[in-house]
Figure 1 (cartoon, rainbow, N blue to C red):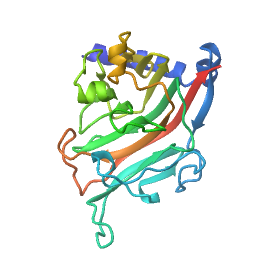
Figure 2 (tube, rainbow, N blue to C red; figure 1 turned 45 degrees about the vertical axis):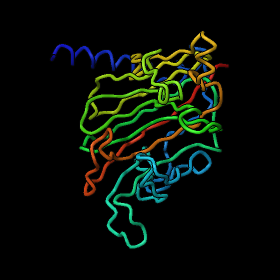
Figure 3 (cartoon, rainbow, N blue to C red; figure 1 turned 120 degrees about the vertical axis):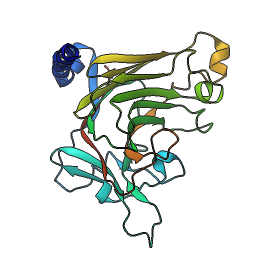
Figure 4 (cartoon, one colour; figure 1 turned 90 degrees about the horizontal axis):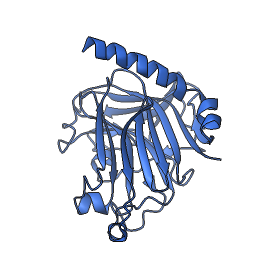
Length: 271
């Protein structure tokens, strides 16, 4: 195990140098930078409103306690900080916690490209952060409209999860036809670069430049008719620090402050 850790560190350092060289990622591979946020605003300020706005509170686990407040989504020392904090005043808002979530819906969306996000999370029972995408047009509703999860982790696991959801995978249960969800082991007590490449008919997930999964469009027209590939349309980005309810991540520790730090977000597309 010690030898594995040393090898992992060497590989990660090499891939990290490759992934963080913006010129190499765009020019050498035929991609150009089309969206980015380095989160270099003033400490204590909100994320750039020309790129991000708060997600809305809804009934889903990830969104049930979202709050549009600077207390759970702000800039600090060149990072976006997203939190889930105890709600100590329930007179006006009865939510047990307040959680941070921002998105580019209506401000920036794209079809096909490479997404890279450098981020760090802090393990704790009930932890449930995510970096993911939803379609700008949700025609047909969820899950038929499609969902792309670039990165998730839960609780105290040193595990990253990478998934697509659709009518084909969720309602019809075709989780392995083709395989639609992957996990990989990485230490969660440090920053990682979560990457996602999306081409016509194919997707690939990466952590620190190491490919951890892929998903492809079926060649069977009947599969397509049943919603196997609802991904030829523009999607927008979502970053959020949520907490579990026991259905996957453990129930939230409502007295704990959860946190995810995002160093930068970059999207590249072919020239």
